[in-house]
Length: 76
Image (cartoon, rainbow, N blue to C red; front, side, top):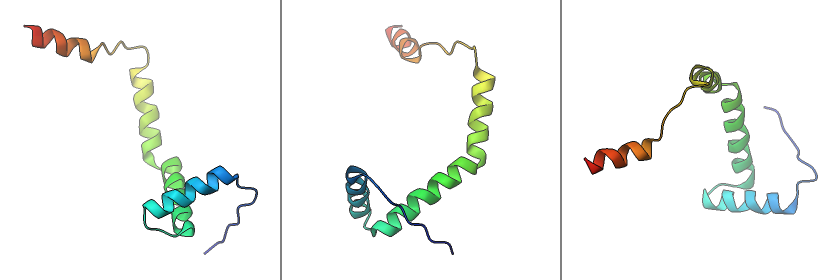
């Protein structure tokens, strides 16, 4: 398994990671590992390609105002 060292991490980012790790009952290393793994999976997974395909399919379509449709339906 590979190792990674991160240098020059801003203090505010470090503190945010520390807080996330504490909230998730993880060590800093486990939290960073989890975040990097999740991002790598999302970037290379089929979900991104599917989202692009849907954006292309729906491009230029007017999707309407759902809130207004519900209000009109309730007013009947």
